[in-house]
Length: 148
Image: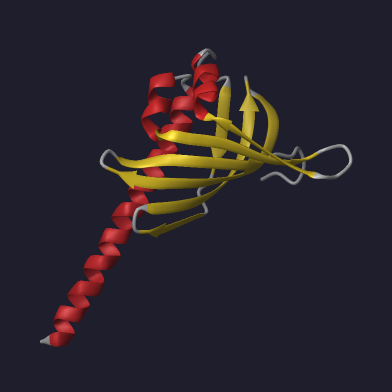
């Protein structure tokens, strides 16, 4: 009896985890779809109110440079583009969820108006609220070589 209850409990947890994983993937898909479509309102829907964008790069001297920016400027910029100008082709390679927090590792190649621009990895931190999963931060790396 207890063994059957235990198996059902473990199966229930597994199905719940798969469902949350799918919800996180959907938010990430929606984000890049909104970028491609230059859809500012679609972008606003996927980001948390206090979301930030970050980038990790190197300067000419080889020093690590970390920059963060408020999300509103990004949304405004993308919303003014023509459809298809911001084409981020990505793969979600890992999602980790613990309660109300999710982390996703998302390698990408970025094309601007059909031409390759750069590649790297997006590290996305999401949080679960009353409206579902929202992107809290995206921190990326950018390079032109060693791409997918």
